[in-house]
Length: 182
Image (tube, rainbow, N blue to C red):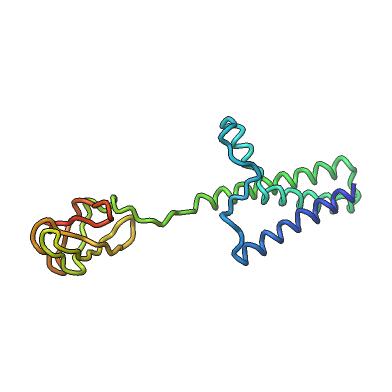
């Protein structure tokens, strides 16, 4: 039984160390690491179960299973208690790593600003906007919690620098159509 614990600890620990080194060197990928190709062909309950198994979780299971198995075996515990303790530690490590990876995945954000969300928002002219769409100016405004600088046109009169504006439309080429704010 000792040989099994040594192999599990060595294989799992090696994979964990390699994953850590790859992450430090920027070769960690997207952090998904699933061993299955997706959950499209299984039911909801099976998909939740399968999401527990990734390279990270399986290597954590092997590492803790092996280390706790070796430790409890050296303490002179009975083979049944050693197997229960090792299995429990491995399962706990698998579950904890899966939980941590799931919470890390929820922290992702796309970072793209969708200018459709600018419609109706107020900002200010940064660079003069020529009259009747004869050229582009620039506006500064808050969109999705960040300040952005966008190209803008006016369909009426020229709008001077510093004037407060309201976005009324977005064109296909991400140019905002603005008018002076009331």
